[in-house]
Length: 240
Image (tube, rainbow, N blue to C red; front, side, top):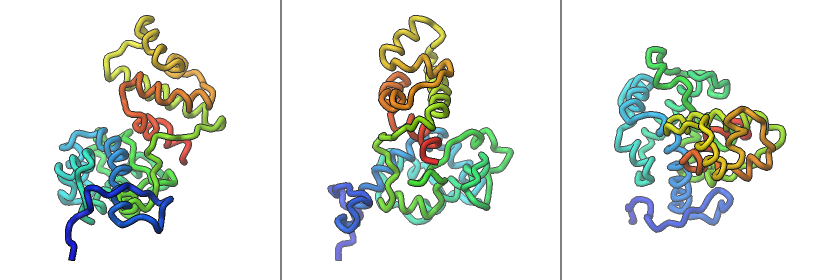
């Protein structure tokens, strides 16, 4: 009997290929998409911060540094049920603490650790709702598609809210990099990369088609991955 873990050479196949994918191929797809989501989520914390918050919510050290790194690097294969359960419970607690009405009833994060969870983004499932333990399992095993390829359609109905969200995101990222976007020369350089970044930074509404077309440019100007921009500043609005 073959008791080896998930095959390293498995081709990633998502839910759209249901019935045609081997279990290893579904898990390969799940590992790729969850890694991209997890990097954005876990990147909001240091490892000690995330472990401390998890301990405070779960009552035991159920998420370890090797697992945090393993999900971020994509090298954690066949994660244990306990860590999937723990991530889902912690994610719901963060969502509840930040006012999500879709997270249901349950534990919240302690107020004395508010600097660790306040304003943080939580993991979303394929419907835009906070992931719980079931959704984490479905995502990791490739049974749902989290649309992590960076593709997103912004409708005119959402363009005002997305413009505002992207502007806030761009300002934050540029300030983190000590880029003075108030300086004319700095802004000129940013505009060469992303023609709409000035309008976004100064709170102007940008056409939906232009927003969609220039998302990769904005990511480049902010020196981040496209999926991070989508997950943090776009998906919470367009995939509600």
